[in-house]
Image 1 (cartoon, rainbow, N blue to C red):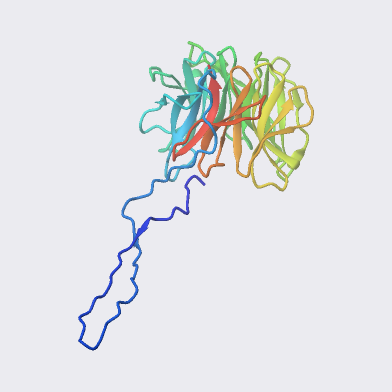
Image 2: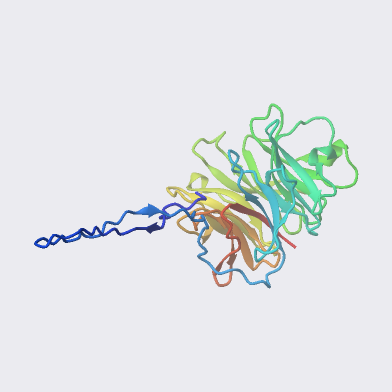
Length: 350
């Protein structure tokens, strides 16, 4: 996916009529013209089709995404900031820096993402200003053990003081949920807090709007083989964990995100028997998941707009990975990007 096929080359031909000399008593009849197809020398650009209208320019905020082509490494590209209508693209990362899962700080002045280190093939949580003036690894905020491998899925707290993420400690059987305090003080072991310690594979944490809870995906395959995955909510005060979905392998969930009013959680999931990813929503207090966005292709990584009235997501429904916006009230779909490269949105900030 990501490249359109079936574009036919243009053709042209030349007719050649054979004329002959005539004898007084004979007449030569010319044969019918012969057409020889010749491929056009002009390349046909692989521009994906635009099947949806552009979003209104009045929508709030800005969208951060990974964008571009990285041969041999399809999940790590440059990090790009765009307006909600797809205009004014700004590349935030250095030319040779690649990564994924970018997020914006609550005030929109900083961003964090998972940087790919090609030399060691590590995934590291990186933080910087939008101007690129203060690049730093999250690991600079703690010292000593644990050495956290496979750092993934960052999520900024609403007050801007913490970043939650998942990582795998040395000797651990699975990834666990952590959070690190992002303040001026660095190199302090107290800056890092481990939030879970179990045999489930945690991923995709997202803070509630009041910052008191974290919703995340819990893969139970290590303790319950069969692909069972559920959404769970961790109370940061009591450290109590509540299971939000209990459908096991019937619906494999990922990438949850909380609505600004705290009432709803959207997420991507694959239903049993389906070959595509769709987008669902569920009341944060619990209930039955409701199908919200679906197509014949994959629709992934839903994120609420700052006003809670729209959802940004990514899809390959046009034959290329692009960014789209879903208007909740009307069900209208808008297409944000139309580049012939991979665009995967991950956050919609102020």
